[in-house]
Image (cartoon, rainbow, N blue to C red; front, side):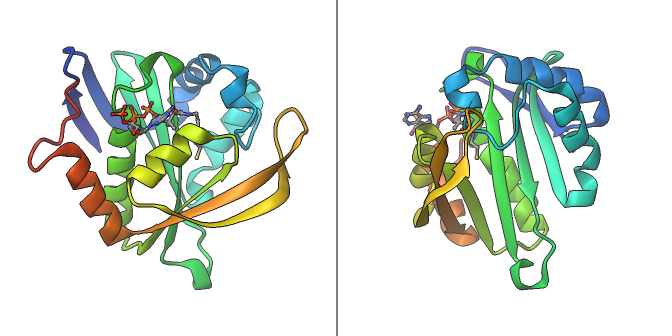
Length: 194
Ligand SMILES: CC(C)(COP(=O)(O)OP(=O)(O)OC[C@H]1O[C@@H](n2cnc3c(N)ncnc32)[C@H](O)[C@@H]1OP(=O)(O)O)[C@@H](O)C(=O)NCCC(=O)NCCS
């Protein structure tokens, strides 16, 4: 998969699958994140061996991993994770990270749109997003795209500073997500263009 996008300021972007050759680019992207973001991610993304292992094992874990590139630089990444269990076979979990330098330009939406299209191809019916309570930005973008808060499990996970955090689970039916996404972009303009 490879697609071209242009932001309103003229920035040219390419969306494509991530490969094992993108590990250094991923490390550079994660390197832009302030601790306030990093501490709530599932893994310690400052450790190259951890990231490398995730990328190399992605396919075996049912993960489709895509990136938005500006030239040679990776500015956002997103994952669609299929649990692969019979009872959740129509579920797809989404994860995404946008470089600190590219925030609020619509890249989060762009990644979510691509993850939606991938999920539709795989006949997923429900999207799931899991986050720690302080991850406000992802909560807001998900809310805005029609996800609802299903449950909050108190004191369930530990952040990267070893502090216990509540886990919030949000879900969205595929059809609701699509109509919200369309409304967000406007009737015909798929580009964020701002
Ligand atoms: C969540 C995240 C991916 C959003 O990326 P982004 O590219 O900045 O998001 P977008 O520009 O596409 O935002 C689209 C809309 O989402 C909402 N939104 C996004 N970030 C927001 C924030 N910090 N506060 C409030 N609303 C926000 C807004 O409605 C925004 O539209 P607007 O800019 O016109 O107001 C980014 O903040 C991030 O990478 N966070 C750290 C990693 C993380 O928590 N990942 C989640 C793991 S599941």
